[in-house]
Image 1 (cartoon, rainbow, N blue to C red):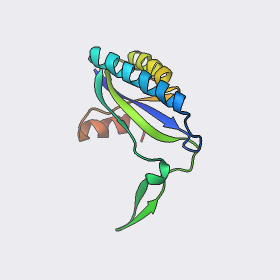
Image 2 (cartoon, rainbow, N blue to C red):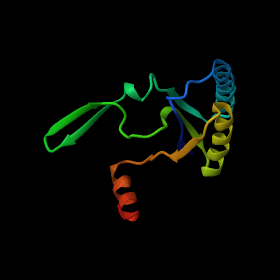
Image 3 (cartoon, one colour):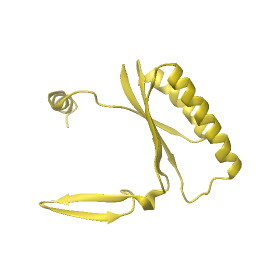
Image 4 (spheres, helix red, strand yellow):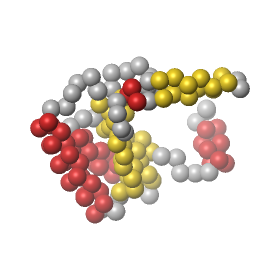
Length: 129
């Protein structure tokens, strides 16, 4: 089994209507039950606050620069995520379809790296990085 990140983004400048929020929470709770019952659930989390709650740490030589705000300037920001177990990308995409329907927003799917440092070096070398 591979672990996959199902990431959801939102535009924090557009307030969510109360009815939409209730619909999303109902869908998310139902999806959580399905993911758990299927044995695919690993972890989920929602981020507290909007992008203004972010702090970015950058290194330049021996110095660190700490700034307020999100890492990137974009309209949509990460709002939460699921970590799931799936046999392959196709299975992860099926869960992402359910998540998109429950969350009423697009879901980004990415496989998590599950190896050690030697594996990472081999993978990066084979990908030309």
